[in-house]
Image (cartoon, rainbow, N blue to C red):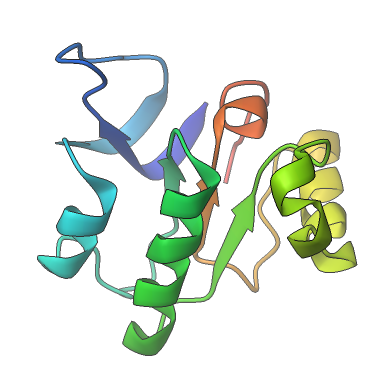
Amino acid sequence: MLFESYINYIISGEIEARYVAKHTEWIQNVIAAAKSGMFQPDGRKYWCYTKFVHDALALEAILKPWGFHPIVLWSENNQTYADLYTSEKKEVEKAIVSNGLVPPKYDFVITTGVLGRSVNVFD
């Protein structure tokens, strides 16, 4: 994956270096990093992998008031959050998987393992 900025957190004390990005931030807690001001709506696009959907949704709620336009993606088959996987999310996922580009409307992609580790992004 080649992406402007990638935010990766340390899982169980291990650093995972899986993506090629111009800039990578290593964090232990996605929510704490967001609250600290690590991310700024400065024209860059961010890709953030989280382990849990609830963390991704919490991060989205933090980012929106700061001026970000995030999109949260996870497995459409996740029954716990199935009712929240909107047609908008499906369209964005299809665009990313099909052509490797994040639609211009979004500047912060927050995703879980299924999408976060299975596509090539060139945005």
